[in-house]
Length: 422
Figure (tube, rainbow, N blue to C red):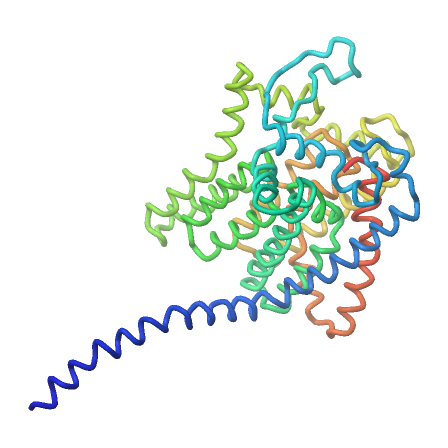
């Protein structure tokens, strides 16, 4: 009997020893599991993207056209300066000087542009992260913006892998991440643009909905709403999925309802703040309409551009020959990609998000040649291709994706940034 108390007295010491080592071991095991799970997809994406990026820079250097353009409009002293032009210039302005929302009339401006362009059209998350990284690192705003974009693109590749892996297995997930690296419009992924950051948030939000992590999905969608106005498609998809979940009662009421309520707060909050600062509640939309000529027109602009390209005319806004021809091919391929996606019976959130993104892009007036970049968030369109390609051997896959990576430096980067307006 005397041995029993002795054994019991040793147990606290044994337990304390376990508790002091378990967290460290648990952290290392989790990190190793994450690397093993996402490493192949992230490496596949990074290698293919680096190949395309290198080709893009080589083409810029070879042409030298950027030397004759203004630094704001596709030019600069070096090839890589092009990555910080166009929208990148505006993001740097926000990161450095903040916002000064205003609606200033331009009485004798270009037809259609009656309001002076203002940085309030650009949402705050990406430039805010640029500013944060620049303040805690030795890099300036350009370097900080590139770090944010590249890191975000790796998280986006991991998120795309997670979504596709859950639907069609890890092999298809790796291929999908690789396809996203060489997709039309992929030049914006490694540039001073907010696209990679938004797609990372969108992919992981969709994954959280698929795995019924409703609170996380709501928070991620809220944050995405602070990054781009295109988050409206994601907000609608998450809200619809949450509404269906409420009807089914499989996750209770509180969690889906919370996700539904959280999702739109980022977008509504920023648009509301801009309107308040301008003294006009619809100020953000007025700015987009009259200063940037970008608004929902029920597809009239897309139809005019398609008709112009197919008939060989330039009688539509923002006509850019090469970029518009590629955009036409992409638009004509959309029905096929949509049918292939629907045949896989994806989760509701993916279907709703993809269709809402496509309707938003094709239904809005904008730069038609930039359709490839506008459709970049519609990553679920790649799922059917990834599923079909998973039957190929790894050498064949490497050859196909490798050739696509080389070609993407032209169609995904050079065409958009130098032969069009990104």
